[in-house]
Image (cartoon, rainbow, N blue to C red):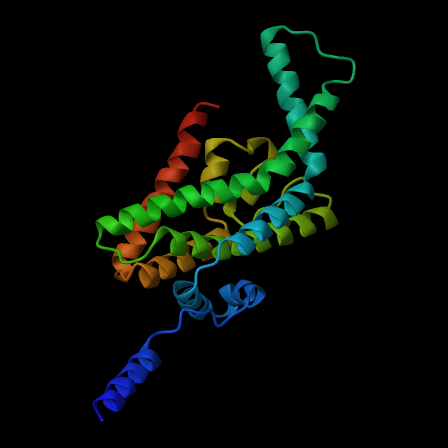
Length: 244
């Protein structure tokens, strides 16, 4: 009788244990991050995945960057020509086009890797600050959520790229920076205004939701963490270019 009761207790304990198996597939999560983000975040919290979303982010980022290949070549060529002139160096007969093409190819190939590395660093910082606020998550969960959430600005970039190609524009952004001349690209004001891109704001909102759920923090704390990191990251982009 005692053995039967013990076995019954064990079965109840096993039945009551939470499932750590994901309820969504990879593409369900990617689509769901747009349509039902809270459910996706809860699924990531149960079972964070890194490899597949990381590979997809690398591939899609490179593909979307390649859409602007011609612009990258010309933008880099002009920058090199200006640098050569400033240093009094002779400009090659091809106008530095060959070197510009090689740099542009490298930019396309490494763009996805750069995004993943940057996303990991941001996830590491996010989790570190969350731990200071007594967060209960993990770097793996935050990194996994960040990768899936990054598909939001990726889709925004793809849409902007397709529209730019259709309208024969060099660059298109869904931010107030669209009102500036293309020559302002990379300058402090342009960088600041692109931070208000619709898809970037959308991404930040979902990241706040992710930090709140995964780290078990209040909305206020999660917002402070994400916005503080965003502002600091923006300053790192703007400050070195002040005066240009």
